[in-house]
Image 1 (cartoon, rainbow, N blue to C red):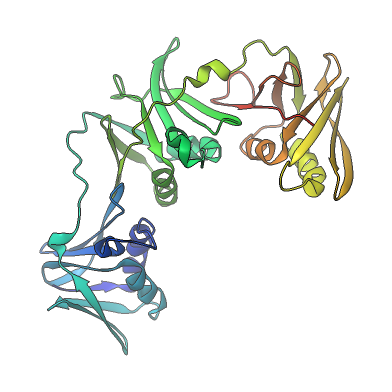
Image 2: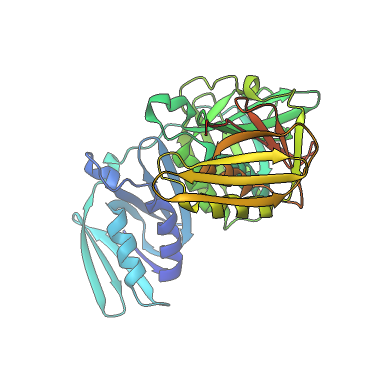
Length: 370
């Protein structure tokens, strides 16, 4: 194999694929990136961790087609440090890859391409398109609520499902048991009959990185066990989480009659300020609601106390409720507009937070004892 490629093109392609590769691997070839120079003048890059796979095609001048695998992180670090604007020559033969650019020359060990594992996609019967902007929104508004608890593995991703209520919609939800985030949008053409799927956290993170460079639409193809995102030059294929997502609709409160309307920015800043003294362990912030007056306070045995009044529109019975300040800030950070609605019931019941009844996203937060 022999090819020449611009440093910037190589670096961009490698930056996408190398982040899939785990730093520690018991199987040596999983540390490698598969590089294939094709006769039609392209360089195909591919990396996998056996659950997630990314393929990217970049433009290159190919002198001799062929394929090999080489350490992904090492090659990425080399490309990063090569002079800007340089042409990089890649040549592989006899178990070695030679990389040359300017006056620099590197030689890396390679492993045969035949040993490189590839995720077999099988049939992906459901396929539809989503605008990149919509996909970004789905991820940004839900992924902070993905659980990191390995024992509840079925919560370690974003749950996608379609339903008719009453119009056909696609819903994306994530929860860690303390908070829930859900986004609803009109069902895309082709998504009817889509199986319920849980997209793993790592796939979500890699997809979100790639979306920053995409305008237009992303092709989504899936089966009950695999999902593939077609991002033009890059293809991201992932296994889905094999588990049953809980029926989260049961925890979305419908009868919360105490409604607070408040500016999300002043609310967020107030919570952020008083939580400065909250301890790592509890992070509890108390919210005392009175007529059009909301007092946020934190009491910490080690650090002292903090309190701040935030203006808000509230006309129901006065009461107090406590929240984990970090969870509350995560939700407030996703809300836009001048006012949001906080639907409360009592100090022990789940609280519903949303921009208004027309907004696509809603959030549920479990209170804390304070």
